[in-house]
Image (tube, rainbow, N blue to C red; front, side):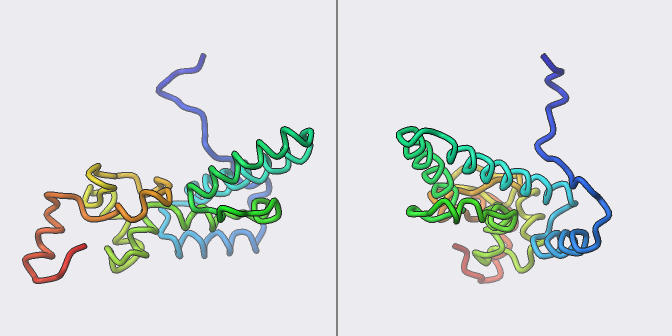
Length: 172
């Protein structure tokens, strides 16, 4: 067993680090989604790669198992909001890191209008001003499921929320 204070990496970096097109794409995604560093992008890419790999592995299964495993995978991805309920295998094989980044708490807070910029959304989350339901969330990389998306709001007792209410701004 390994040391519990040193968990395994959740990501794998690029195989060849100096490809100009990939570097430019990474810089664009880091800026567009307000990521702290490229490692957060690599985590999303690794997660997308695992979903695609699992879909390819399903193709090699016998017919009866294939249908059952495919339904389980589609249900999981639909719950996360990455694909629709009636997704095809091609749509699962087409999952990219951008699909994963769109489901991050930081992005959901920005898209709902709780923050003016994507960077402000990250700060609100890390400082504990955002809650999912009644539970305070402090991880901007948390993947928000479709069921939880409407529960994302300002945390009760948050000084940020109270300051907005004092200015007369209507808070969700």
